[in-house]
Image (cartoon, rainbow, N blue to C red):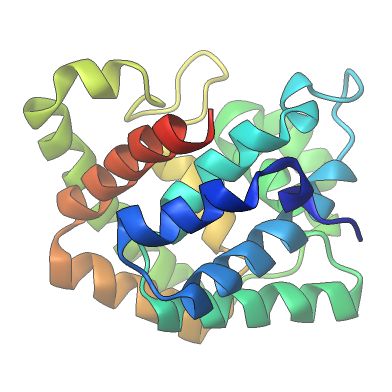
Length: 212
């Protein structure tokens, strides 16, 4: 497993510590997650071969770090644990994420591959549905507040083979442990989902200024 952060100047990483006012320890946890995730992502083969974004490590870091910075340290610790468990079991959750996204964008293809995916327990399905509903409300509210920003984001509903923001998020976290999912749900309720989403947007813009 190689280190995606070899592409980033150490001074820029130090600037992230300062700009986001986070402990170096927390940034190291996030870096660990992104490193594992990148190596999962690098192994995913699309129907038409390798995707362009798989050769854009800096953009990958920006987009993934923006989301992890919106979580708290405890959630990031749990996500790292979950990804390490996937490594031990030989499961690629990034492949699984894109496979689950097909239930929103290509149902016929999804029916062909769904048997390869781990089962989701009824309890986890219920928790994911709760998060989906909360997240959707946040997207509607943030679209009213930041219309120009949301124009560039994924749509609220999956249309024309384009995955919605909700579908993408739920497909991703479906591979987390139930305990991790509950922590995410509690965070989104506590700070309000529109604030969580806005934090991701703002983090993305700040990281682009630092890393691009």
